[in-house]
Amino acid sequence: MGRYGEPVHIDGHIKALKNIISLLQDNATFYLSVPICAYDTVYFNAQRVFHPLSLLNMPIVKNHLKLKRFDYVDRQGHLHLNMNVNHVTDRITHSKKPRKNRLGIYTFHKR
View 1 (cartoon, helix red, strand yellow):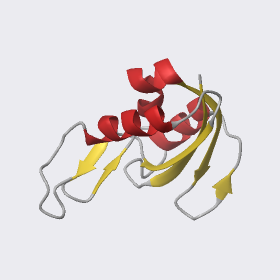
View 2 (tube, helix red, strand yellow; view 1 turned 180 degrees about the vertical axis):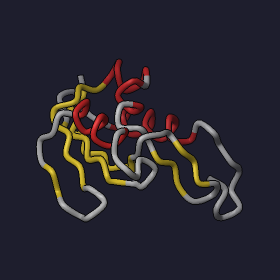
View 3 (cartoon, one colour; view 1 turned 90 degrees about the vertical axis):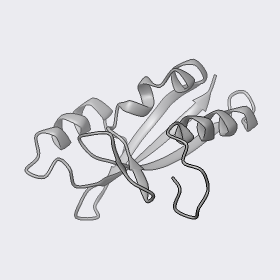
View 4 (cartoon, helix red, strand yellow; view 1 turned 180 degrees about the horizontal axis):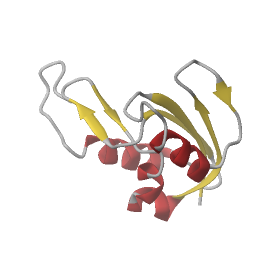
């Protein structure tokens, strides 16, 4: 992200996922938590925020991982367990503050 003077890589999140996936054994469980909101957003040199379905639609994820569970933490700090990611996406998109970040917790198995 360039925060510490390193080069900016617009696809750094994809490179990181490729590296992590390459380290996973077949059938391994992989937990990934990322900030989520109604839109893919980059806060320059700070963080990347994902639409809840964006990760699932990335080819690297589609080809190597299977979503087993989705949990999230809402803006008030409440943990919602084993949620339907499409339902959460609708809830966030139609909320009064769709740009406010939440935390998505994805549980994947490597194919």
